[in-house]
Length: 350
Ligand code: ADP
Ligand code: MG
Image 1 (cartoon, rainbow, N blue to C red):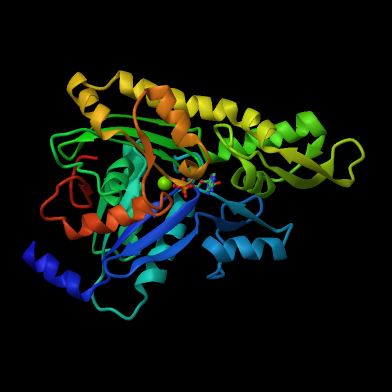
Image 2 (image 1 turned 90 degrees about the vertical axis):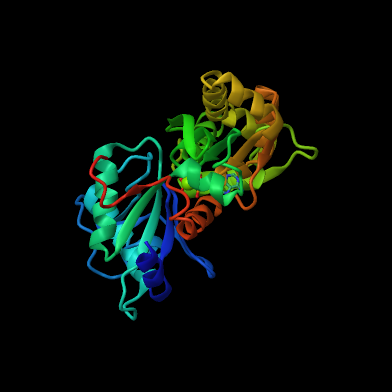
């Protein structure tokens, strides 16, 4: 252990948030050193990652616009499960090498946060991929734990901490205490589904086809879960479904809120469901400690308000919800010897 810590001084140990939308890498003392979309460019119709060096992350997204037709973008973790192992491995290897570089003699230790819902086979695949990408040792940390650590919650203490992490593909809800997850639920309803609800609304109400990026922009600019003190409007462009021609229209925050009701309702339901399964002693703690919202979806206006009224608990956003998990993985690296929360690459049972 001491030897391992000494080696740590000479290698660039890193914490990775392998998200369905974004992958972040955090290094002790340096903060977030990489923040890129979890996107891989492949030759259309195949699973072959482009042999280009630029086929992953931001570059993959940029390249796409320039070479339409032959290349398509894949989000290998889109629904919180690994859709394609090879593509996920290529992506992870690219990010680890990009951060670590080739200049150091000693390979890094890597902590990777993974969704609570992933299977044993998927965990093994993530561990193996990171090892093949030159990690000396790999630790898998459950995402809500990482979020709790990143938010500075007392997750190792005998009191309940509750995290709701609303990402792109999945929402993870967990109640933790004494360094363990007491109850958790994961659903495949999150930010992507809000975008989809907006796309459907535009189709149904305006016969206007819009893309995913536009839908996400609408959500970020005027989207909300609860009434706004000042309602907003936004001009939206797309393709008319009847004439086939480009057209624009104006949408209001009220109608977008209505469109978002369904996915938000499902997220609220999973939170109340988790609370119902919680031990009474822990439930009692939550009256005091409240619920903490993390992930990009927590930034939707008024979602804290909706959560508070649905649960009767105090719901607050963690600081910088988008980087909370990644920061948590890096903090965990510093406490590997004191906290034993993760799964390690040399353990047998997965
Ligand atoms: P993941 O961990 O699954 O990669 P993130 O925590 O990075 O996901 O969150 C990505 C999601 O958050 C996306 O669906 C994105 O549209 C959404 N998001 C980001 N910023 C905002 C915002 N200001 N308002 C609403 N949603 C947002
Ligand atoms: Mg996440």
